[in-house]
Amino acid sequence: MAEQCSARFFLGANSPGGFRSLYDGFTDPGRDHLYILKGGPGCGKSTFMKRLGAAAEERGHSVEYIHCSGDPDSLDGVYIPALERAYVDGTSPHVIEPKFAGSEASYVNFGAFYDLDALKREREGIERFTRAYKAKYQRAFRLLSGAASLSGGVTLSEETLVKAAKRARGLIRAQIRGKGSGRSVKRFLSAYTCLGPMALWETVPQLADRAYVLDNELGLGDLVVEAAATEAENRGYGVIRCQSPMFPEKTEHAVIPELKLAFITQSGEFRYPYEPTRHIRLDAIPSRDELASLRPTLRRQNRLRDAIIAEATGALKEAKALHDELEKLYIPAVDFAGIDKLTERCINSL
Image (cartoon, rainbow, N blue to C red; front, side, top):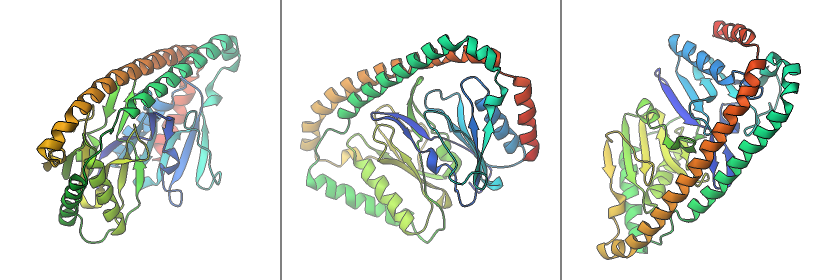
């Protein structure tokens, strides 16, 4: 992020296999200092990071914001590359501990602002709501597992795969040239949240002047993105590999900031809303007969998948409502005046 910009990602995903975390790769441990925030619900960690990010932007710095996949209105991290500094919520489900305490990471203890006697009086409610909201997450994970079993369930002909590979080679050869020097990272650009499936698409034009959007209903876009990311990395460019929340081991988008270039896939509930540099209709590569044979299966699978994802969204909404009730028990016991003073000290240190 050489020019000032505000990039937004997720580092965690509600996935078929449970909560998937990329928090270990948030910063460069050889360069950056990571401040790990510790403290339970309702203690102001997200507000603290929002204020720090806004203050850094006011001072002309680029900022990367990490949104919570459970509650996208809440922040789980903020990174200021020019200051080699980041703040992150290091509590469950993305527990973070420093490898070398003090030298590359340190703690910020928000638990120090709790009235512990007041919270002891709320122990029964705290335990009840904690168990209840975690149970809703487990239901959401099971439903997403069912949706995953209905995703990408078509077999394409060898002829189609060869044509797609040829299209990918031509596109990559034309767009990825020269040599770079950057560090690749993994992020999530999209997530399944309490607000439904969500993608932080506004990040793409912040980081890339050229966006190539690839249709991916048949899975061909994944092949192109992986080939593009690999070629860029082989040339030394840093790539922001945006993983799939449904299949976290798979890269579904690749952004190459040094080239101001992005390869974006779109399918199902995730559709790119901006005018692309070029829209590449990979789903038109199969022959007419092959497409005709695939469509009935795809329609049936997609109807079932959409219904299951809607159920998963419902479970995540219920989890959020229960977590809100949990926060209501904590908030009266928090010394927010003390947190304001801490926030002002950190802002002044920028």
